[in-house]
Image (cartoon, rainbow over all chains, first blue to last red; front, side, top):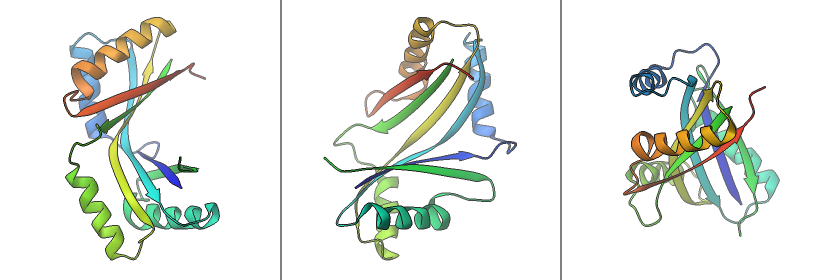
Length: 82
Length: 82
């Protein structure tokens, strides 16, 4: 099972890195960019687990480890490994 | 137009952050995780550009700014903003 996890800041949370990148883009002439959100992306390969188990385990990992749930939100999809 | 960009290490490139996270997961008992890839995720909102323009501009930004194409690869999707 492959889990694809996205972690992004919650709405309203200040994102200094995103702001800095946005400024750079404007300076370089990419004026069409009006908003930017930066986040983390993780891909986990999991062996010998059912979809249900994977869902529980990945939720646990996100809550405990990957995301700071005070300021970040996470979402993930599960795919059968090829 | 919304661009959703994923930047990950190319195959065979050492990913120390991913390795460290993997070790932590194993230590914590998540033995089912056999592989982990960490990357960056960006969401750009772009105003007043066609899909074709957006595609060219985002490619340019990825090549020039977001990805180190020696060791990283990028992919993106474009969606019409709601």
